[in-house]
Length: 209
Image (cartoon, rainbow, N blue to C red; front, side, top):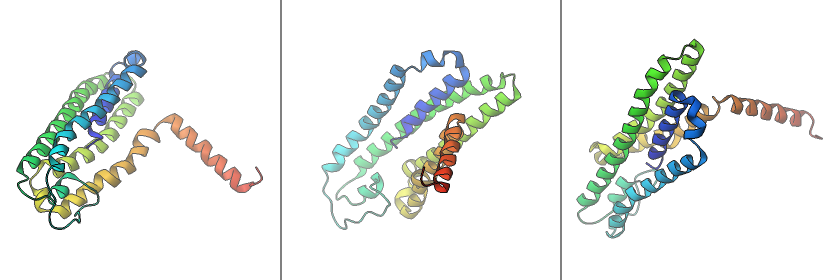
């Protein structure tokens, strides 16, 4: 769940862009951006560090094959010997705090964004703002929905195959959508992409260039 704090930071950035556009450069200066990113990274490390310490103090037993695509917490816990209730509880508390705190930031941001968008006089401006928000919420819904299922429901320990299927949303679907939502929708990115395509076509037609 390393990207969850970053999603909260992105929600705050979106709030400043829409609600305080004239003050954006002042509010989201390089120092603030760096501080937000560093805070998100440090927060992620602090949240996973205590369960990791407990995890590495417990011995392994049985098979060393992980029933998952990657080394996720739940399938790794299933390889441990002894009572893993404390570790499971720590992981659950960490997931609850991470997801709920990030969701709270996103909820407050969008609660303030909606009235600001409605007040935009230009129809094209309102449509563009709503389009940007909806595309962002699509990725957020996929990410948070799969995380909630994977880490906050008891069924994931009993149905590992379904948990693996849900993890595909975060490891494949969401990253696949990110370039289209956060990059290719940007006018400058579209212009750069068109120029790159034209340059590639010209090189293919005239290799001597």
